Length: 108
Image (cartoon, rainbow, N blue to C red):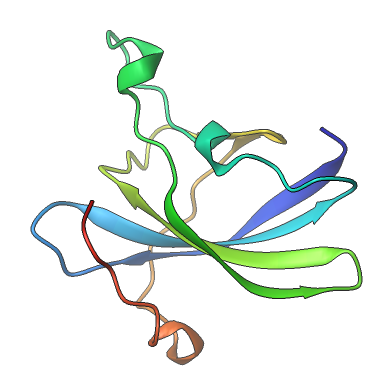
């Protein structure tokens, strides 16, 4: 896929299971990419059992860049996030910023 992506932030969410809100900036040409392709390897598990992005939301789209958020369950901070743009290192989590306070988690 042509383009690039950058993780803006990783934010822990209060839930019954480990879950984080991920803010992502995407610069891509053509159709939107498939959020189902954002995953993280789980050694010893079939790829069909790996976690994927959940409940993605477009926050902003202008000038060829789009800012999204999505939830990710059981994030492993020692493994990269696999994306259509290649693997991405995961930054340290920080508290949810004010501009994302309105994004509420609802479990699957």
